[in-house]
Length: 483
Ligand SMILES: *Cc1c(COP(=O)(O)O)cnc(C)c1O
Image 1 (cartoon, rainbow, N blue to C red):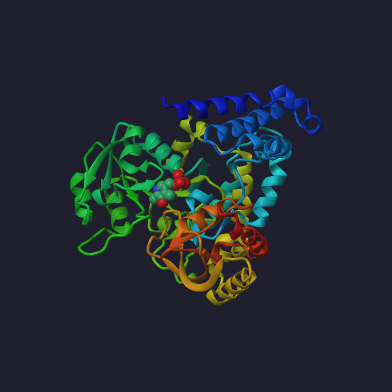
Image 2 (spheres, helix red, strand yellow):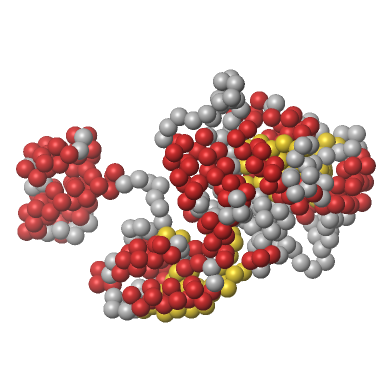
């Protein structure tokens, strides 16, 4: 080590020695005040964190001898900030300005206000979750939504009497449970074009293997015909699985049998057809200019014996998995021990029932997903202009640009909805730094980068949050050096 290095170490050691101990800090007047408001262990932890921070500053040479007293002056305030930060929940509300309506990283579908109220009411008190109020006897939790679900997905097609519906943790669980209960040890026919990964590690071949069912691939990646399924039928066949191509699309030399063709084949061979439907769509989306997404009732009407769907995609409800299908199949699934292991909480039932009631009462427009889809591009543009104008004097360059929103959540990958965004540019910082700065705001604002600027698509921002968004954006002050 050089003499220069020795000298530097010596002066650093001196600086370290000049620091107070944790106990000394705890006894200082301002920190004693904090001890009255917070548990001692939390204050001790905050003091340690703050002192560690100072030590790191010394180690990296960012602090000189004369600056220590001033640094110590600021310590109690820092400790208070650390205490506050440590109490802040990790799961926080954010402003989704990505323009992706069902953003899996941002919690997919936001609930309707009614659903939110019902969750709060049911979660914070007792309920008749498993009590039949008529007889006073033990009830079943799934009965609270079964009738409503069937009314929405099976009544238009007259299947209400012959069908049943149950709810589990998510669509992945629903698919797994159905395969396990109905096809373990036997063959399941799946087109090679549908051996897909849905995202977050949900891969059809792996789920099948885990369930104990045997995958029997049919057709090719781009073309599969009904005859391919037929040729693969054998006494070992338990079912035909149809997987919704939710997060990708194929074009060119492609072929896929209509659902009805598979149903006909299944009927002839006395084999059930199970559709991993995914989206959980209840009402057609044509009114929003979106074509090609089948509703659950269309799948059942086409003769599917069983469908599995997510609650928090195009249904617009809480995370859950719905299995709707013929009584015979659903009863077998219900009786499987795993059904108990995958059951959902009262909060989920409360949110799902309230969401289904919005459809039932003709008020699906209250569901945020549909409100956001219905918002006109011009209306969004004028909100964007207001936000951009509010940033006129704060160092961020903001302009209004046309853009396209997406459905997201592994649904309708080709769908684009015309929208507008506030494009942010900062003279001293790159787009990814601005994006990071936005994530550090309170509430965090999540945008996306397009051509080296940050776009905030207001289609996915609740208009009631515009004021909060403007206030947060204005606090992204350019003078700080670090955004
Ligand atoms: C989204 C999706 C799933 C997984 O749904 P989760 O509710 O997230 O478990 C499964 N299958 C299809 C076809 C999907 O679109």
